[in-house]
Amino acid sequence: MPEVIKNLINSISYLPWIWEKSATKLAFFLLNANQNYIENFSENLKNLKENIWFCKSCNSICDKNKETCNICNNQNRNKNLIAVVEEYLDLLTIEETWWFNWVYHVLWWAISPINWVFIWDLKFEELFSKIVDSEEKIELILATNPNIEWEATASYITEEIEKRKIKYKTKITRLSRWLSSWYIEYADNITLVNAFKERKEV
Ligand SMILES: [Zn+2]
Image (cartoon, protein in one colour):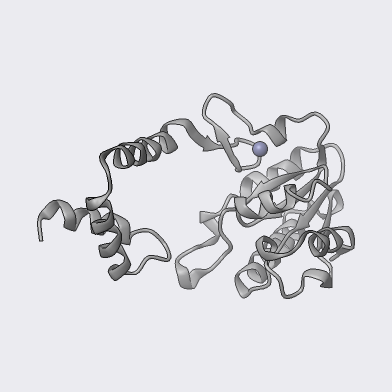
């Protein structure tokens, strides 16, 4: 097989959820795709890194010509209420309910040593500094998904807040049983809204 195709297969295999056989199939699909599509595709990939970065405040995605995202820039958002989510997709799902007026902190991962995701890979420090820097009490809504990784992540945040002696400035809440066996991204609007509205302090 030509080196160029092998390299492409390698790049595709690096993506999550893609097995080597699917990577090979995708590479041959691209080989047969029309020129316009390929040019557009490579342009979009290039733009991704050139034009997008992470919000300096909440770690969500943001245009590179801005320091912070639209949600953080919005004066009407309650900065003392922070929903901590694993993924940007969770943020989008919550925003689609049009119900809440808080800000977010996106971790992008949950702690999972088995998958080589460690505490230092996640943006916890930025989260803790928000509490330290705030003059008012902050509510952290741990918008956790039902799995071991998220349990570990939630425990770490809770313990660390105790350890850093900032518990008096923090109210930590978890979602109610409404969402006990659902991932945020798959929950329907009503379940999601109820789970957040009936959140409980831990
Ligand atoms: Zn932001």
